[in-house]
Image (cartoon, rainbow, N blue to C red; front, side, top):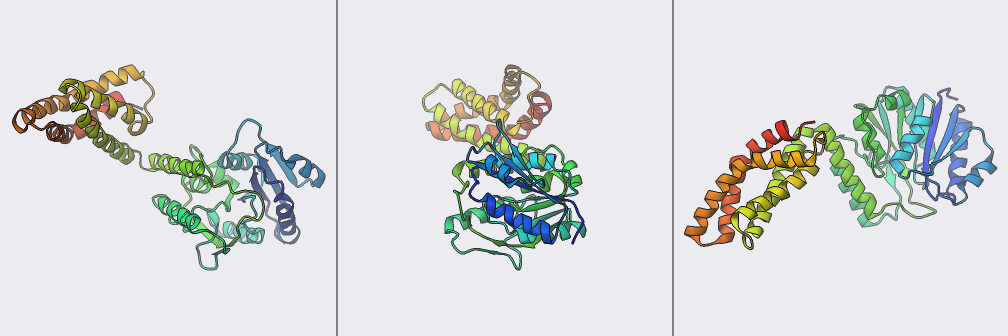
Length: 350
């Protein structure tokens, strides 16, 4: 038997029906392969009998942490990783989908030099149990594709993870959201050598799935956060450009019902609100009023060009939508680089 110290982290919420089977499976691994194994269950105050069940188990190698003031799978995993003291940590879902028999193989991968290990459905030898719907399969593939800017791992959406505790402690600026903590850890811990261990992924046997539209929206937010972390300048510029395109649409619509100068001001204000929120998300060191004033002053360079171009087209082409489009587009082309650079340097400083 191996002598490595291992902590299994099991985040739970209303999983009391699944816990006896999960504990039995982990106990078998402890008995046969990993005697120095402990199990940390991080429960988000399920109030479903989980506390009573663990108390009845009366096993010193099982520890229950009940969180009363915080919820979420990712933050529960982080809490478990913080509390564990073993050399190796394994994160496992509580729905019975991840085979405990893969844990020794994941520990082998880590002892042989891997920075991170993933229980994978999508490598040779891995599989998914029949019963997965088409929509869930598509959801998994799209989510995996969205993770490509950060890792080449085939099953980056897996919740079955392993890493050394020292690797976790080296993480920089952890900011988990949603349910995919694995991608966060791979990126923020700087893991390059990720080994995928093939597993057979079972469908949930008991309880209800936690995969909701809210969870999917949180994953999109998570991807955006990671892009900001890995490519902050590109994300800032392309978001600024995208907001500018939306501002052009606002300008054309406003021009049909408002005076020219008011329409320009409306578009600039629209751009400021969304640029401050998304393109310059990091800049909160000065007041919103001073940022707004600086933004308007810098954008006034393009606004002047917009005013004269739009006025000329209104007089000669007699088409307000066309005038707004040409004027706004010309101002955008003239001012986008100027506006971005000067707003970034002067208005939205870190």
